[in-house]
Length: 294
Image (cartoon, rainbow, N blue to C red; front, side, top):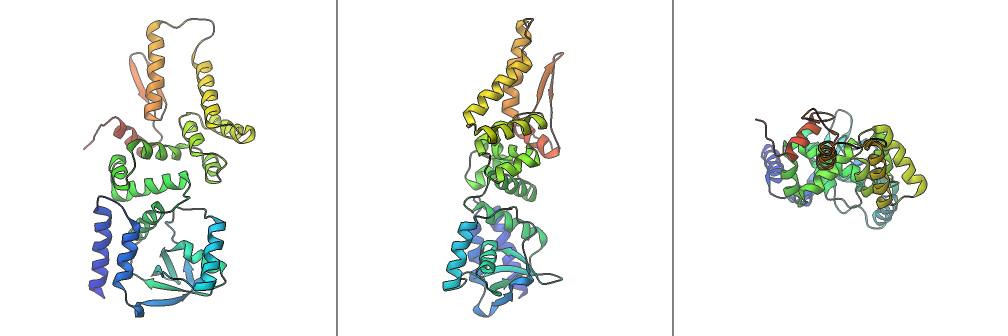
């Protein structure tokens, strides 16, 4: 039994060390290691959802379809759990667990594994990267979780998941949005395009006001871009006096830097001020600037 645990641990490490992150290969490895006697039926009401699950919402229609399939044919693939002080903690298979509840099942086939909390978190993050219909905010939290867990850069993550660096950077930038605006994205009231435009605005109250306006007026992403550009120009360009040519160049440079770095930038007195929210935000900016700190 001890050898199996060690083998599974090595398999998980190899999965994260590999060039491409693939949750399906992890689940397949677990299933290959177990025998029929290792699959047990557990009471559903004793299984707690994975606390590290970044996904907050599930497609109800898809769950109902899966529940109907389970009613007719049962659960084909066992869920994976770990024993906890009271009952069990889910490691992988939340859709199957939720659908089984909808189907009226009282037990579900499961494989019990001895995972650490860190391994539970990593598996939950990986599982969600493979899901369809993951909201952009959930994806951003999943990206950030893997970066924090593995201690890798945005560029390394982009390579591992087969995405462009800019795509990963833009997605992570959504985490700077106020919580209520993130909720609007989660509910699909705002698209990824809307959220990306809003994430480049400095002030939270302005973001919230514009987000509400987008929903109320059913604005397109292009309309929002025009509105934010117009408002920025009105705020930055004095009406009654003409800026010196050098100052105008600085204004253009500020705009370019702000859009590139995704944060507030000020240039004055021959100094450049770059604002950041927290350590993660600072590391993101340093990475864009290709600055490495040992």
